[in-house]
Image (tube, rainbow, N blue to C red):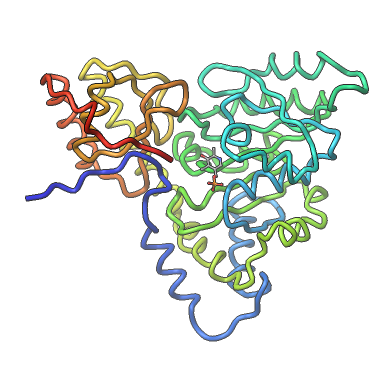
Length: 358
Ligand SMILES: *Cc1c(COP(=O)(O)O)cnc(C)c1O
């Protein structure tokens, strides 16, 4: 019997959830008007407004890099700067797209434990220089859930939001894993967005179970003026828009997006508990769908040799075990079983194991 090895490399490695697939199929009938004027797109935008309990503007992009960088571009002039954590995706994984699309806005890095921006560091950086020679701080970009699987609490976001208003900063939220954060906090989506001062949210669909697509949600509607032109110029205006928008109906209706988030988070909790039982050091609090653990090189190679997929170079050198909407407890338990066998053995596959690359 061959055991299917689970995959903990990325929530981007998972497939499409059945609800999204079904909505896509339903939208595939006859002709519909293009470029976002179809009925599916209208319906999804209304669902977002209901969900956030406010009259926001909604746009769709193909991926998160475009969502983030176009949103930031809409919030900045070229001489402005964006404050973000040093581990933020906009800094480490977008190939300079925020700087490119904003026409030169510089990213300024802020520190903070557990992947979270510290309010004091934001204040210190904004006050450090106020002269004309330094790019004027304009935006605070926050990632929720963070790149290391932690979640800002409602209070933390309220505090950051309050500070930014005093400093005349706008707030961008990278919500590639927004669903996982809401699943953890159990609050209404408005509590960690516009009520906490967020002007623009990039709401991740891909990692939550769509094939493709992120929503850019402007709570500050003034910032959304002419955003459709930015999307078009960047090659992000989908002509057959219904196929980008309709799958959202599947995950937004009946709370499937939260169910998907809860499932991924629960798998991560189970993983964390199992790793702790094996006495392994967990590197960050597990508050969303990823677990960062320190493993010996011999053990990493052994697991890769056995077919398990995970990265060992993300977030300060730990191994990142990422759970998805479709990760089962069985996947987690089988992983833990292999891991404990390996640790107890002296098996060494360092020269044979495949190398994991992005
Ligand atoms: C995955 C991810 C994105 C989006 O990445 P794309 O590959 O451009 O879709 C954005 N922010 C964070 C924190 C992510 O993990």
